[in-house]
Amino acid sequence: MPGVKMNMKEAPKRRTGIKICGITRRSDAMVAAELGADAIGLVFYPPSPRAVTIEQARELVLDLPPFLSLVALFVNAEPAYIRQVLDALPIHLLQFHGDENPAVCEDWGRPYIKAVGVSEEIDLAICSRRYRRASALLLDTPAGTARGGSGKCFDWGLVPENIAKPLVLAGGLNVDNVGDAIRRLHPAAVDVSSGVELTKGIKDAKKIAAFIRQVNDSET
Image (cartoon, rainbow, N blue to C red):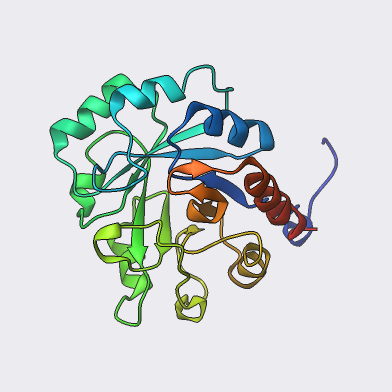
């Protein structure tokens, strides 16, 4: 407003973004959108129980509302396959959950986030510098070949303060722990999959609603 100066310390706190990952059904995508999720994640990694094909993804993104981000998750995918997905679907953000180097992540002309399995052996400050063009680092539980969706938390105490990169928190989040996670780590966004499921790949509308409500309540 003209004539009004805002002290940066008084600036309103940015709300925590919410991503519902591992969507496999159009009905679940619609529920997530209607309940206030900011993004849904589509897994293009065939070994995952939450994987979708390009054809399935086309169906489940039909009639989604505007301003809902579609995130495509890849794990060491062939470049030709990534290009097929991008040509077929209105993907807004890429998520690389494998061993991709920065050049691979940056090769698509789209914003991306890089998943990191957090352990005592991982230096997140180095990761932040290595993937300096990433929109965020996604912090997850090391899960071997599962590559996410383990339902297990990592040690939040391993996350140092003042990482020079926005953080997306994943790994075992659910309605019971997400509020504490937000208050402790102040992530830019939280990412949930198994914590809002009936079974792998099948979401529960009540759990999604409770999770989103808990995220929003943790900021009041």
